[in-house]
Image 1 (cartoon, helix red, strand yellow):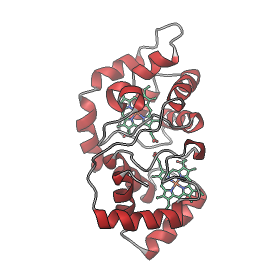
Image 2 (cartoon, protein in one colour):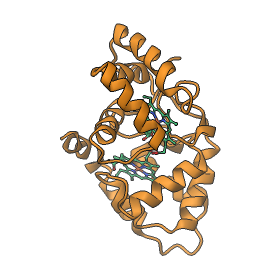
Image 3 (cartoon, protein in one colour):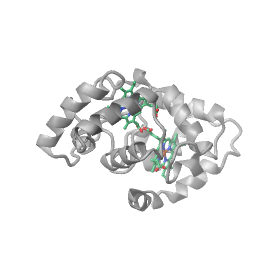
Image 4 (cartoon, helix red, strand yellow):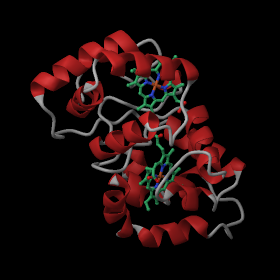
Length: 199
Ligand code: HEC
Ligand code: HEC
């Protein structure tokens, strides 16, 4: 149900979707393409939160794959499916080149519970660190950004992953299950840790 909340944030930027679908430009440059994302994802992909994830510093393979799965509908979304449909694979690659060159951005001053964030850090190191290094800020993992990403985005992403509306890595599924069995409130703790944005 969080998705309705997300729409509140993206409606303002609605006009930009039209730009996204205007692929009449002969050969748009990577920068021109990335510019169409800025209205929602922030300048050069550095999001201000709370609902929209950062793109800055995401690896090229992760970004291209995300866009492809939004486009073919295999990854659940509120708005990205429509946006992704306006671009070709070649354009996804250009966007990937552009965002991979930007520095990873951590959103500052998000809400989090201190004690819970501390517990979340422990959980992360135990169950998630192997594939999400440096709190999930190492682009080389090809696994998105966790620490310092937008809180509301993280909340609905966890919801989608745990109710299986978004598929996930098989080994990650196992770890997630194991963790939630031991600690049913683990997700909130992790989200507090990631929202705090510090290692
Ligand atoms: C109208 C607002 C809006 C615009 C414009 C927009 N996005 Fe998004 N983007 C979102 C939202 C909201 C999400 C979260 C998924 C969802 O609910 O659709 C998202 C998620 C993503 C993700 C997933 C990030 C992750 O960490 O997994 C990628 C990648 C992405 N967008 C790329 C782009 C690119 C590239 C552009 C420009 C071509 C773009 N977006 C333009 C709103 C937007
Ligand atoms: C075996 C490796 C592995 C482990 C362990 C793992 N992950 Fe992942 N995770 C991935 C990969 C690969 C992706 C990106 C591709 C995908 O969506 O499947 C990902 C994506 C994610 C995303 C989506 C990121 C985004 O920006 O949308 C979240 C959230 C996440 N993982 C959380 C966790 C948490 C929390 C744990 C620990 C309980 C964990 N992962 C453990 C491999 C792993």
